[in-house]
Image 1 (tube, one colour):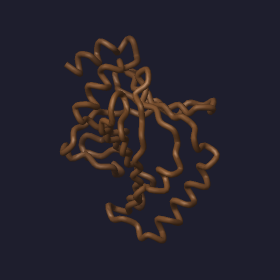
Image 2 (cartoon, rainbow, N blue to C red):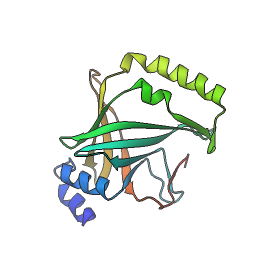
Image 3 (cartoon, rainbow, N blue to C red):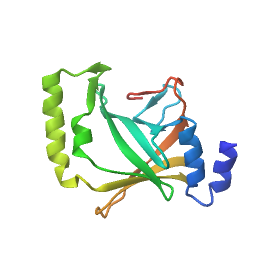
Image 4 (tube, rainbow, N blue to C red):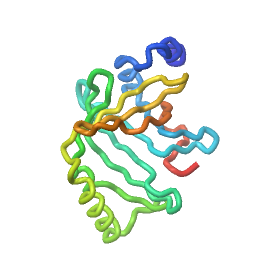
Length: 172
């Protein structure tokens, strides 16, 4: 049914909010830049319902393919008019987990890296970030936009995956 829905929406572009809610409530996760053969993603976003259209988003992203460095951050998001939106919160960043090849970084190294990232991102703190799901050329993509920034964040291909499907955040 989901594939049929996507095909019907291909002409329209935007994925309806009801379809996004169905996927999120079913426990599906979003895998960005998927490599189905290697079962890898450049990021995986997990969503846990938190009442209404609010979700706890735990996102893991590949920071450095060479070092297998990943960062996992948990934050609150809300589904608004078909977009997943939240504010860039430095407190969430400061609680991030950093791993190299799946192993937690030592506390001192983690603190230094998080401190540096927080300093660089400070001017963006509190800004609203929204990601919409669209169909472009028959492919599901995620497009980001940050409040107060003229340039849209680049879109990236995504797929819905299920927990236990074997996908992980890593270089392809």
